[in-house]
Length: 447
Ligand code: GLU
Image (cartoon, rainbow, N blue to C red; front, side):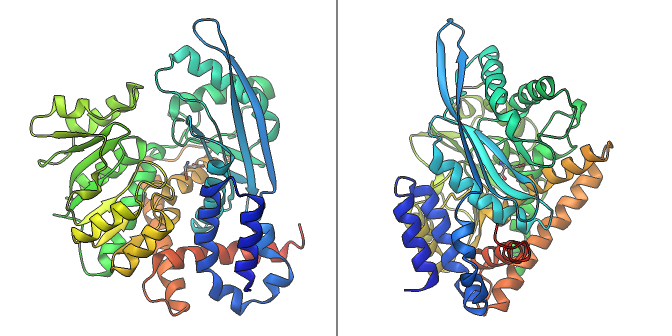
C-alpha cells in the first residue's frame, strides 16, 4: 500500500461521517504522489498525517433571541487547520447545511489556496449552521454578536483572521467586527472584508470574481484564445458570481446564465453591465435567496425552476454557487455540448468523478483553489493595510490582484510541466500549493 493510500485509509476510518472532507483530501493527495515519491523524508516525518489533521478545532454554542422573543441555539465552528506559513486565514460560512465536514473541507482547501497566493497566510475556516435567509436585520446582528462573543478569544490579527463566505457579507462582518472591538478593546485588523469606512480594502468586494476571470483569461490565452466574444455559463448570483459577471462584461464576454437554489435564468441577450448586473445585488440583498425575479424584470430572460444551468451550451463554464453542483450527470451534459473550458469559481464545485470525466474528455479545468484565490489574496492585502495603518487605492489593489492571479496560473502550469503532466492545472495547483507548505512544515520540526 502506498503512503497516500495508507493515509487516505486512516482518514476515511477517522472521518467517515464527513464525505466532503474526505473528497477534498483525496483530490489533493492523489495528485501530489509524484512529489512524495521524490521526497521520501516527508513520509518519515509523517507530513501527510499531520497535514490532514487540523491543528485545532473549535465548536461552540451560539444562543440568540429571535424577534418573537424565542431562544434559538446554533452550532458555531472555527477550524484552525494549518499555520505553517502564516496566521490562520479563511472565511466564515453561515448556511443551514454547515457541519464539521463542510468547514473541514473548506479549511483544508484554504491551506493550499492561501499557499498559492504566495502571501504569508495559513489555512482556516469557520461558520455556523445558521440560515440567514428570511432573518431580520436585528436577528442577524444578535446572531453575529453572540457568535463573536465566543469566537473572539480564539482569534486575533496575528493568530487567526476570519472573513466572509456564503451567508457572510459586509453587513455580517460589520456586526462581528463591532462586537470584537467591544470585547477586546482593540481596533485591529482581525477580520477582512470590512466596510470601507472602517479599515476595509478598496476592491475586496469584487476581488474573488475579478480574480476568477483573470485566471480564466490566462487559461484561454494558453490555447491562443480570448474572452472577448465568448459565451459563458455562470451559476450562482451572489458576491462571487457578481464580480465574475462584471469582469466578464468588461472583457467583452457574454454571460448567458445565473442561478440560485430556486433554479436558473437563461438570458440570451446576456447579463449585461449596468441595470442587469446591479439587479444581481438587489437579488442578494433581498435576503430571499432566489433568482426567479430576474426573469420578471428583464424581457427575453427565461427562468427554469429547480434546474441547474449546466445543460446550456457555452464556450466557458464558471460555477460560482456552492460545492458539488457539477456531478457526473452535469459533466456528461457539458461534454455533450462541447464544453472546452471549466473555471471553478466556488470552492469544490465539481465531484472527483465528474472532474476526472471532464479531464478525460479534453476539458481544460481551472481548479477553485487556484482560480478563486483572488479573494483571500486581497484579504491578505487588507491585513497589510490595517497593520500599516494606511489605505490602498483601488488601482493599487487591482494591479496587485492581476499580478497575483497571473502568477498563480503560471506557477500551477509550471509545476504540472515539471512533473511531466503537461498543462494540468488541477495537479499543478495542488503540487505548487503543497510544496511550500511541506517545506515550511519540515523546517519547523515536528509540530
Ligand atoms: N471565503 C473566501 C474563500 O473561500 C475568502 C476567505 C478570506 O478572504 O479569508 O477563499
